[in-house]
Length: 296
Length: 274
Image 1: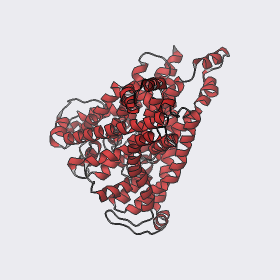
Image 2: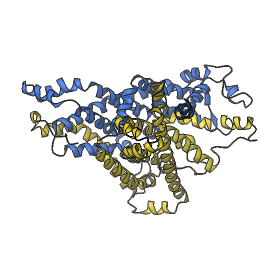
Image 3: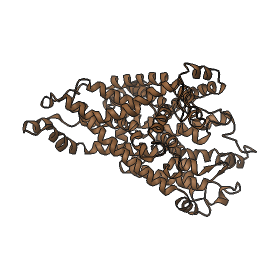
Image 4: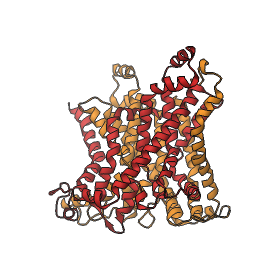
């Protein structure tokens, strides 16, 4: 932000500048910064919905540390984030490389294939839920018809199948995010870089490994941290498709926080669960900011 | 020729099948009659006797039209408020300046990285105390918390691209601070404002967690929340109407997306830059 200085003609307007920022700042202080602090504070209380709580120190956290459901949720969240972010990166970059070529209809495919990221997540989650239906899934139907299976697959009734199903839905939704980012990144690489490499007779894969990928690294850091932040705190897909089931096997931090705080009424405990995500989010946000500044 | 087939068309086919199939499935289910929905004998990939019964039921037998209007109102209100406030903030930070302006810009951007997931519990507490619970209008200020950071960052980038000389020339001609801002820079910001509005509108239309937690009366719900809570009851899933609702609920964002697809993609990748 080297050019954030005021122009000479506008100099001396510090109060004017601050006044312009004020409405945005007030809204964000009241409805973002204050709740953020309040959330941390609630995590140290035994508050219930509609009833003020008492300060109970680390009790919520001690209780959670011994809670097998919370422990499983921690493992789930980490697994869900790592697996899906890696696959979204891989697939998103792959699709970007394809869409960066020139062929008939490339503009059409570029806009249509980004749709999973654009439409409301809950609405597409309905489609996935129906695709994974224990009785009427087309996947089961096809496999049974082909004679490869003699029974339907209970996608959402088995812990590991349910986790896998949710990961597929998440990858489906998040892949275009990487594609959008990488397409812009690929287009900003000057073409003479490639021409020089082609004169050297370098093969496509070597060009990618030694030129394209290193040039994309700062962007990769930004996309990965953003994706990790939003995957780590995913709620919509899981709550719509499995509600954390079967037997709490697919809960993520946020679905568990919702279940305990809103469905169960234990605000303090829910806030503590959400609070657990804060250190990880802070690290990721810091990494994202640093990458953005380096790239600027 | 063979290499283009392997490098372009084959991967493209696989990506297209994976990324677009759920939409096909959604649309197909929306017009599939109930007896075909629960039959395992018929081929599920086609519909023999398409029907509009599900759509008719959705529009006349459920709260869908009401949810649609509510969502439209909230999304429009929150977007206009956020874009206006964000443009002022972006102008103040980029063009007027004050001590700590660039730190303020970064702080606002950092707000975008605070997910609703860690704000919904304390916000529920605050709205309860304010008596704003179950009031759709309360979602307008709440949505600004994720819209303002995004819009401000986007508009800061846009304002930096408008040459300073235009402003300086007007100042030399004796135009006042406000006149330069509202009479000259505001009209030039048009395309940036449109981009910001598109993002704000689609982000509000897609919001789920806040609306789910803060609204409870059926007539106050938004489209995603209404469908997920009123059409999914116990073990009786109304797959037809649910999918019809999913299709109709996607339409506003899909229309906006296709009208402004280049701007959408540009804005999206621009927001990842410093």
